[in-house]
Image 1 (cartoon, one colour):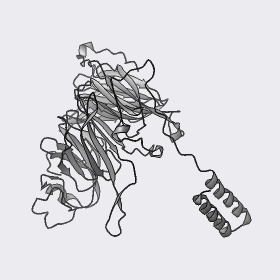
Image 2: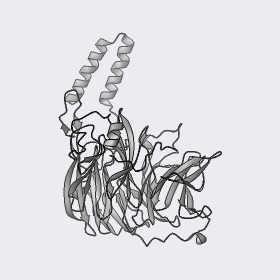
Image 3: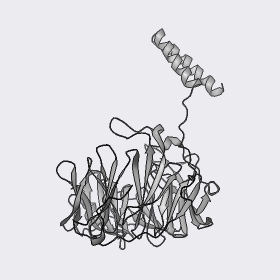
Image 4: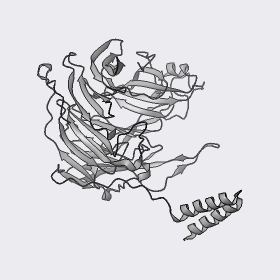
Amino acid sequence: MFITSFSFGARLTLPVGKGIGIALAIAAIAAADSPARAQNLFAAQLSSIFSPAKPKKQPAQRPPDKGGPTPSIVIPTAPLGFAPPAAFYLGDRFTQASLNFLDEDTLLFTFRVPGLIPREPAAPGQPPQDQRHIRALTLALPAGKVTAEGLWVLHDYSRYLWMLKDQRFLVRDKNTLLVGDASLHMEPFLRFPGPISTIEFDPRQDWLVADTTEPPASDQKDSSSGASDLFSSTASASVSINGHMDLDLQKSQSTPQDLVRIFRMESRKVMLFSRVNNAIHLPIDGDGYYEALRGDGPRWMISFEYFQGASRPLGWVESTCNPALDAIAPGIVLASGCTPTGARHLVVLSRDRDKDHARLWETALAPTKIWPLLASSADGLRMARATLEVGHPIGPYNPLDNDEIRGQSVQVYDLATGKVELTVSASPVLDAGGNFALSPSGRRFAVLNAGAIQVYDLPPAPAVPPPSTISAAPAKP
């Protein structure tokens, strides 16, 4: 098990440029220690000056395929101020945009503002801190009218936005979480002693899982009072909720460490915490979480681990790698394993059924679909899965080269049957996601493609059938 020492109920928290280049090349020749080396150096300098490397290009934007699905709504993104990010960001997994449904008829579209990177002044001996400006827009469907807009100042390149219930969302900046609404009004939610690595929720959003990296605690005059301003600059303050700190965890800190905490969303009270070696992915669902346990050979037992200590096996999955697990709906887990050919094998299991009927469906995907990203509808009936399309299978002896990226595609699945309701392209390629979304009911799907936000209408999703009617046949990819 990858979680250790959980404590239940704990309280927390030739232009001129070329002329200069030639001069530098001549100076390098003069400094060379041999004629041969000087000649080679001069040739290399001239090659770099007169034959500069060609800039990388984003994969071409793909228009809707003729005869393929047709979007019901198309909203051009250029008038909104969106510009595709430069191709050299591919592979860095920087979050450049976020597209979400606030409700069935309202989109939240946020994206980085292109231009020079502003820098904030820093303390002596510290490097200046980059700012990233994010433009936020709410768009009313079907016309795409802007109903609210704002400009956010953030300070890193990781994911910054997560959707909540009731037209709300969370925004992360370094060690702070803010909660916003459809009017883009923002209020403080949580502040941590160190930067937040990851944020996750259970499918019902009753729980919030936060991974943080925090400095060692030190004695502070205001520590004993048990109260601190939510945005206090005290580095050693524990997680604060409406000004109240968790002193129990603070006193236990002595060295820099990675921590995972599980909060109850309604009260923001920390129910569980653990010290870990690095940030982890915790597929939490209700009163426990899913885990893959190694069996014999390539077999893995997918089980549900209750926080109180009990365990419930769900079924075996064949995989040559440790299967990735995601809680995609209440009581439903997606296990993504590996086949010997490098392809991905998807298995969907339900913990609300006995072991003979826990497997709902499974399918195999081509090995040229990599770096999956997931989104689920709030009703728990649909899942969208985006992947990069590459020219060859990726492995230890076949690393990924940006030039091999052919594009990005998204498939929308019915969770009950595994049927693929929609397959569309996404462009520009955003390897950290943020360019597709499912509406709360799963009846609408939005994607950035071909210079526009394209919205597709989908039929009602089928309900998950009772165990007696579940077919053992695998779903078609």
